[in-house]
Amino acid sequence: PGDKTVPIEHATMIFHAASHPKSFLSLDKADHLITSKADAEFIADVVGAWSMHYIDNYRA
Image (tube, rainbow, N blue to C red):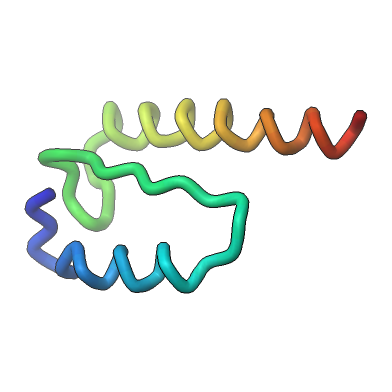
């Protein structure tokens, strides 16, 4: 990833500090503020699908 605002090492530290459930998604060519509509839609789809796994398990 080539984020010009925050180095990838910051994301790694946050990821390691977070408790489970967690996943790390790196978006090549996306900027830190996610100014591309296509990138934002992709992220929304991925996060939505990922979170449904845990929401569905919580409801069961």
